[in-house]
Image (cartoon, rainbow, N blue to C red; front, side, top):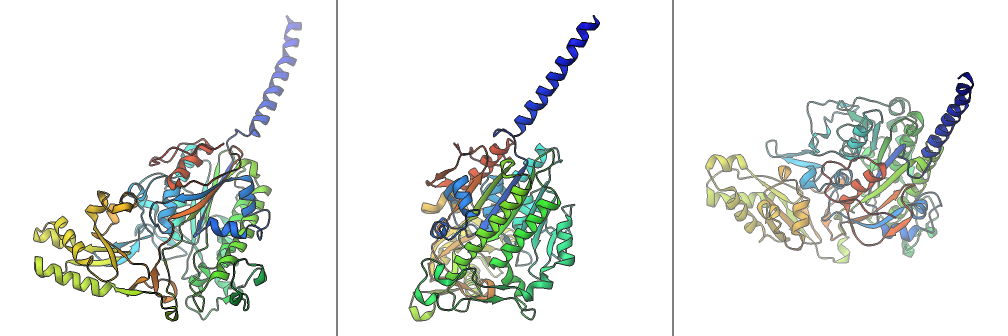
Length: 534
């Protein structure tokens, strides 16, 4: 009996060793769950520009994505969306009509001013006076599902130049969300999130952008003759943008520059190292945003050199981010997804000497005339509350008090506005909900959050701009321009072979596709199945 037991012991020991070896091997197999997820949103990213500059890029940024990842040339958002709404589509897998976020700001009909769609007075700001929370998101996000899957052990952090995007990316269940405050230069957050990583505290107290901004300058990273497709006259004088302390717009200018992308990367790499992201039992997630949007603080409105330089600099930032991942958990244990948002549809008006047709649509005049028209039909009163982002808001409280038919009044208002100079179409909210917007009807319906919507939607002709309040950054006059509603996307994962998808892909597929690679549930509002990757 004793001898039999002594023979069993080595067998058990061998079995345990074999089990340990098997577990060790399985942890490194391609089918294993990753330890880190990195989500990146890039405002204004263009595949055409990436292809144009590919020979100028180094091997470890965009070229690494093109070489080792899944490349989606055209991620289709349906209609033009601002960065906040596009980010919500990517992280929820749901259209704005479902996720509740169709733009960064909404019109407050009582105060008659635009406010953040995430306004939440019950949540105080930290390093900011902004009071925000992710409450406007009506569904779960990839970040939420990752936290739920790990029972709260894995952490989710977001770093953004924009507060709305920071909140969307961290979602309802994230650990922290920080954004760049363009009034103070601090990294700010809200009391909704409970964690403040040391990396952020240290930067705000000892390496604040406010204390360094007057020493920063944005100049070309390369000799001008190395940037492709530039006309000869743009290769003569290099640009130089500085942010002096006596400039009240210095933080806003900085926020839109390639220099801001460098700061985001520095904070992100600090997070990976100081919090040891990707080295925990459950998956961690780090989300960040970059900007490639038009830089409005150029003297002549021609920002082609700055745009090319922004891509070159972002290529270096991506290489630095990937290096931090390689030195941390390792890219073999990481899923990276990088998604562009559509280029803005409003651009700076061309110089008058070029004689490009243009016009100005007066917001105040349109409100006044529309109100007079409605008074003639429905009696005296302030029937129009305001205008924001191509939408007119009627005074629904007054409509209800007078017992008027809101749908009928919308139709009357749309018919009147359609006759104004520069207006190419006017649709009622009822038209939008029913998908009666012509060729873009279904896309417009899908990308409208009814709770935030106005009563009449107008579209302006190309070359036309809105006066009194829609001038944009630097007080510049912006005009409408027909632009694509697509942007590229990239996914790097050990379980997805390098491939390039050239046919348009619905933007709502990113969330379920990433969720599938992570082996977690898709967000609860995800509307499409994941991509079938090789």
